[in-house]
Image (cartoon, rainbow, N blue to C red; front, side):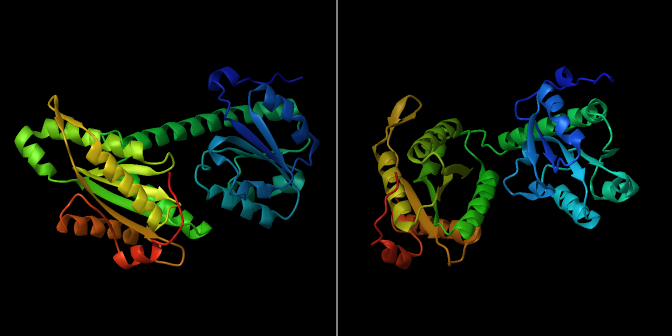
Length: 333
């Protein structure tokens, strides 16, 4: 019996590492499952290659794929190419196991995205020996992607407040706009800033102003729901994205935050400070112009309108829509 090379200790097995065995019609593919489990991989078996294209398939945790080849080569290569087009799959090894016909078409399968082709009469021990280095590097690849994603997330946080920055907010807004379009739910946005903040900086200095901005950000974070996003856009301006919230709901949320700010005692160089803020609100619904520019632009217009009309207020833009929506019986908590 050939000794299997173990990469378990080398790869420092993570519980999220998984391996897909699709169309295990060859006995060796069924017999290799215990070997994969022994190496610490979570094994999923699927009846067909179409599992690779399932939108719910967790590619981010995938260390490798074993495919049983027996069918229309054109259809199979199409599936492989489409799988390789998915995010996070370029470094996932694909091991194809088949008969003589598959081996004769090896170049075609490699061009479509297969990394290793082996004969179906191979022993499970020998197959594991060939696959282990590829799975090891597949795990490293996914680990690197995860670390890079974490670094990217960290890079899109505002250094002063620890909240998402403008770039992260734009990405979240675009993602939620697309979700609203698909599932037919409303989406709202609040833009706010501190009234007469410039005077704080001019009178007490930038360091004191930064402290007030941090405190203001904390107030807004405490007012939002867990699945909403509050981000610092720059200076003392903040944006609040309200998921699945219509105009009246967003107005009530802004009104509640407006009241919290007025009642809050802020600290400025060890002394108490009272602030006010102006809030601009907008909302989009299915069937309307679902775009980030429309949503955020209208909230910004509402903020400007609030500043022009005396500050320390909550305004909705467009006003006509706010009046029409006011009769809706909804609540945001």
